[in-house]
Length: 303
Image (tube, rainbow, N blue to C red):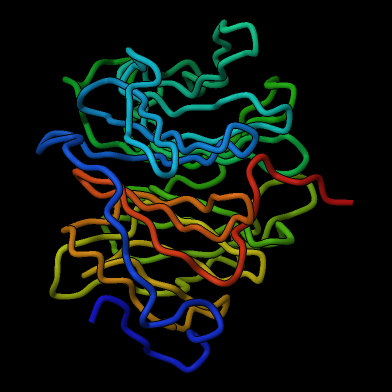
């Protein structure tokens, strides 16, 4: 069954009869997946990363995927800041970068305490303009003395002046996302196969005593937690064993979208009403329609 229902609450979010669409394929290859989908609302199109081929793709509904920008320093996760500027987590340059409206590039973060970042993976922006990103230590290059030796989750202040290590005990921190009211930060660990949740303190750091494993997404089928998104009612959408899971804010699995690919690398809400759930795998881009809108990007300022 393409869409499995684990709990009755799923019917409010998606019908088990909803078709799963394959929109484009032929990306990534064995060495690097399609990743980082991002809906560009005012343009009516989706951007996503073709990491191994070092390019950013553009998909317009009803059309074909085409090259939007290259090279990209093999960028992975993408998002936008409050001013609508594009942020990307770049593998080759080992940094988080911001593309200014005039086309120039601003480095958001490329080192911590004088040591180069590992390989930034995913990035989000809070409604106050602060930037959060994951930086797994996957040893992509021969170790050098100025390299970090741990995986980090970081916060960068809105003025880019202060960078804070939030957590350093993940094996492979990957996708991250706030709850709708930004009181909770969810971060998944691809290696451990679960999502952890943290209460966010007023200064933007995490209350470490609130750390808990929200849900385990391991299983016998291929797929690990990777990119992650949240809808306006707080339901969580994340890849895992066998497909794309829909989870309520308590960690209860409501259902699973079985799109047929071996991995769900990332996802994004889009469309004029934010009710199209786009997802990437190692090689393709797909979508399925849902009933509850996703949180818009850029983030809407909270009062």
